[in-house]
Image (tube, rainbow, N blue to C red; front, side, top):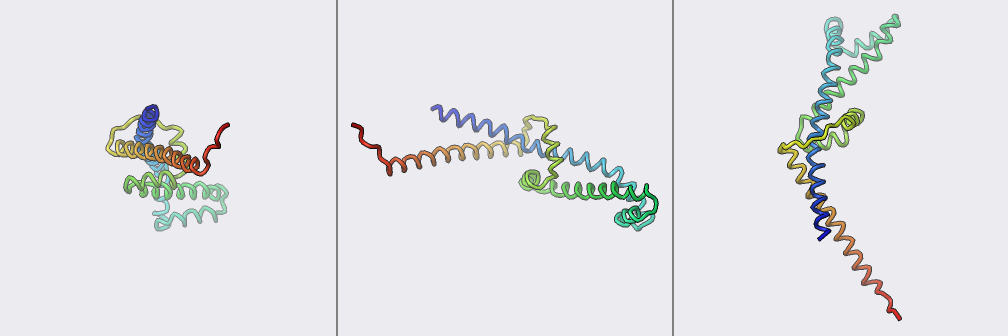
Length: 173
């Protein structure tokens, strides 16, 4: 009986953890959107310069800065290159997060920007959203946790019974 109570508690814990996953993804998307919006403020100005003088070629703008005799412009090439890299990264991540729910989970877990994922986790705000995705994820997490636990317990019992058959207890005198 104690075993069943433990399984119920494990299932409830899995539900609570499972409903956090869509919330974490939402908070990651919000952080990404904020970072992208901020980067675009500066990017647009450099893009306007590139549009005016270099047919919109940002790489040509960076190269022009790198080859400049003026040390101020030469040094400015590094932050412009970093800004362009960040904007491209944020665009790519937004494209990945515009796909299906399972793809979002996989992307955030394995391919998302580690620094931004860590920042999202550090600043994460726990709550229990009752969205369809949250309920679905919570139920799946509970089922997987219970199945995994019962499978492990059953496997251990099976292995113990086999071991006991092969190694019978010695008679006591």
